[in-house]
Image (cartoon, rainbow, N blue to C red; front, side, top):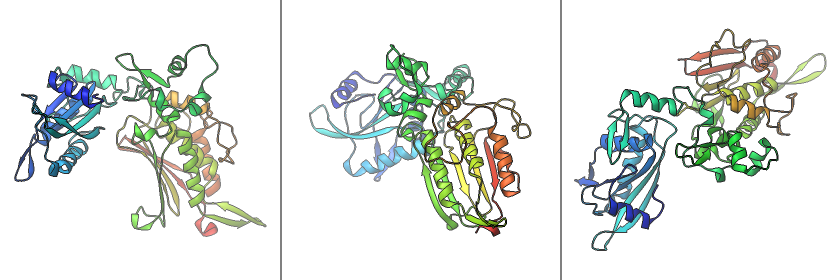
Length: 416
């Protein structure tokens, strides 16, 4: 990445290479005429698919002359880039956009837009296909190269996604208060210890970055690097998913343990508490808290974090609770045998949850750590929920890409 104005001017003087690209923005009739959306999408995706780099808008790629962008069109150009990255590239590319002034050959200051694109965790497809950078040119990936890219970035699931380095991250992005619970006293450096715990991971150039698991457990704001690693929680009035009947909604973010805590807080805040007479009055919540806790932990531990654009969805209704978790079932597990089999997609995440002490705010769970790894989670969800409500929870696999768990409410006539 180009970090300052002096470095940018030096790179412009030297010309394009594998990590920097120049483009002139052409206007006709007050609208952007070139480069086309397709061409820019291919350029941006190629940088993300390679080692990352910088796209500079307002510099001629042939003459290296700074021609600039008219001030009145800056917002249009910025919107153009956002639309391209969101709508023309799959999955969307994450980038940082900066407006700058730099001198042209006569010394006159011109406005340019600098777009920094980190090496991505994903392989991006643009309108022309899958591209990468070879020197200063954009080339379509050959099938064998593309296959290797999918393997390296774990979308083929030959490598553990949770252990992959997160581009543009480092140890400074991890909180000592959070990571110190996962290490023991050692004579080795903190970097070495955290790498051994797979909270740090080496990039291809041997630099140390935070791993996906390191970000999920030890970064105060994981969404800065993994935008979809959160829980979408909504409470609806009635039994239909309809935004017009939305009572409460919260986008639950933060380290994974905090997401579990906050999801349980959302449950306790929004469920009915009623009463039954046996023969004395006994308060009865809408859902069994132990079962819901296990369901949330399972969703957080076993979701597929490599699926871009998907998040855990936690929807509450008058008659049921629905939890959607991205990803298909791992290995040989299926809907019929999942209460008997123990298998995990994310071994490291499961291990770290088993070492994370449960917060004091979580009660009535009956254990000290978020996960025990005995394979009891699904049986607890099924048995405790059925005992509480009289209805057995139902698991469904949607399009082999999302797991839906439905937990039924206790008799709403008793508890409303």
